[in-house]
Image 1 (cartoon, rainbow, N blue to C red):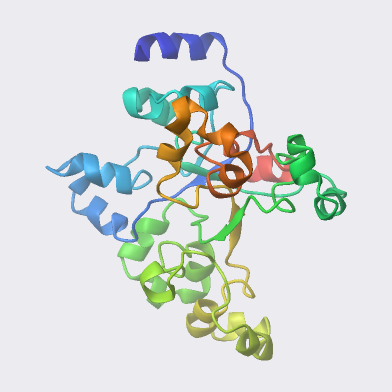
Image 2: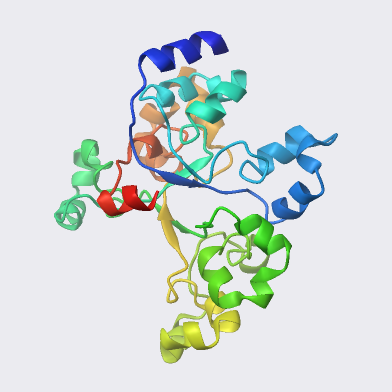
Length: 269
């Protein structure tokens, strides 16, 4: 089956959809990678937690075939893991595409209820339609290793901005949520943006949104999303469409549909 899928992909290869960041799922991944844990006795577990540090996906990545969402929906991310991680990292949840509204009218459409009345606009207006989540994502390839070497504390001005995930800005243990948001909005407004650069070690950790550390990205918001999507004979995404689109956009194949933003994004990547 993997060879057949690979052949189909080569025959039907298209550069499609939006780029995203491949980030690890644990801030300890950089250290584990340095210790050789990716290939150790717990290598499979570590690779699942540390896809970037273990080389399962490139830092900037995207699906390479328009059929990736269908393959992922059919269970191929699990059954043909090696092929799918390489060819369909977005549909398999490794890449988290950056979100933006493609049309200036998105806000107006959303306020008039078009996101639910006309679901086809969701891929054009994921921000206004409330599908995207504000998260901490590393924006540099070497963030896990830099963090493992202690750079989050020794060089906070650069590291907290470039590597908010590896520097644990969105710690679930500390904040109760992985959402990227100011922890004390009133105090952040008193400090103002200028304090982000003057005192980054403290202010950026308290005010990640004010300091521009947050990224709007498309990802599942619940760990049960793959199971929900596969339920009801594979119709979980369609039979409860509103809930699933809001909570499980990756498992329902939506994240892979977000197009590239602009020429600037392409040039950066």
